[in-house]
Image (tube, rainbow, N blue to C red; front, side):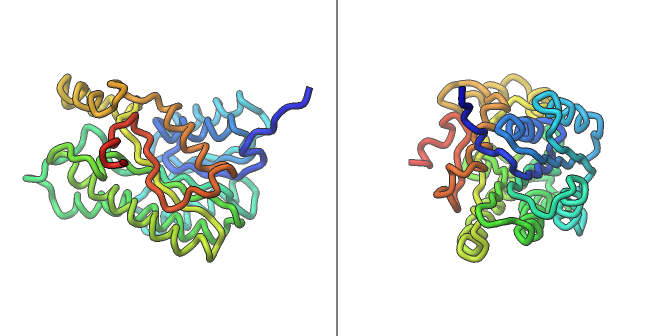
Length: 268
């Protein structure tokens, strides 16, 4: 019996922040969809990154993997990620880039009344500039048909109160970066650039927020969705994998919703 080939068969991918949470789910989903080479960066938790790679190898022991440490606030974040990906996987190009890493922790957010300039700058660097820096380094090593995907948040459009102002503003800036690069690089490099607007998703990061802010925050984030629940990380990862696939070639410069209808009014 003939088998339908996996849509990402033979693709080379890198997922920043791929050691845990949503990033881990994305890396695993790319493996399930046929990616043959997968690199993941992690902030500090090497053990979690190794667990992600072990899961990938259970899908197929033939998948070439590499994990490495990278800090979104470091000056050479983009070049470091690209160099580690190419050398660690033993390749000369990358087909799929998922800019997922962030420096924002769900239980360590500061209200607007106490927000420092440094915290604001770090949020912008850790989300918007780091994604730009990675994209501009990676695109030089991408063949035509490549995919650059930036992980955003519903907080970029949906007001959630003063605690997420810096994070929401940084994700809104990321979406602006994504759209403008899409316009410039589609004709120039033949790649697509999109962002994924993620709603509240069951990850360790969300759990930290739930522990910090209590039942009211839990209820509020569930009520954002038309389905009145939090997403499974695999549900969001499936959307990312589709945008990474050849079938998504006509989706470009968009902020794709992955939020259970949370932004339905704004999306039209």
